[in-house]
Amino acid sequence: MEAKISGATVWTGVDGFGKRRRSTIQLEGITINMPLVMEIIDEQARLEPLLPQIKRMVNDNGLVSLHEVEVF
Image 1 (spheres, rainbow, N blue to C red):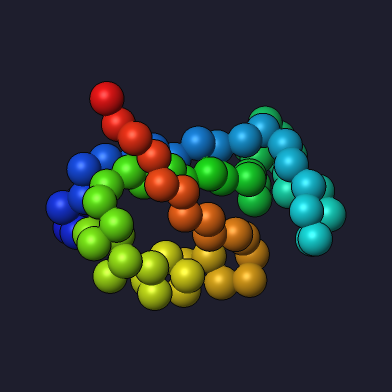
Image 2: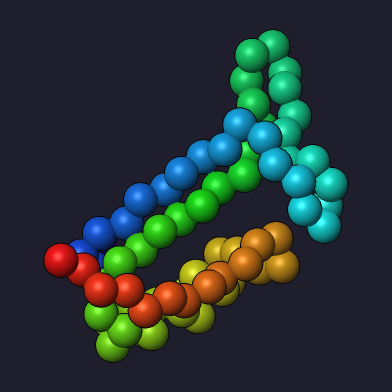
């Protein structure tokens, strides 16, 4: 919101796996370390300055992918 991008959505998964094996731990109904997908849509020029911050947040625990889309 501080970067004034057009919009973002964070999806939480109930289970997942990757290089660190399964991404779910259940403790008395509370799920810890849930897999997340963050989707951000805006113009490339507005997103590029955010990439270093996003990469620091993800560290080596995730993947950042960029896709050109057409919004109607």
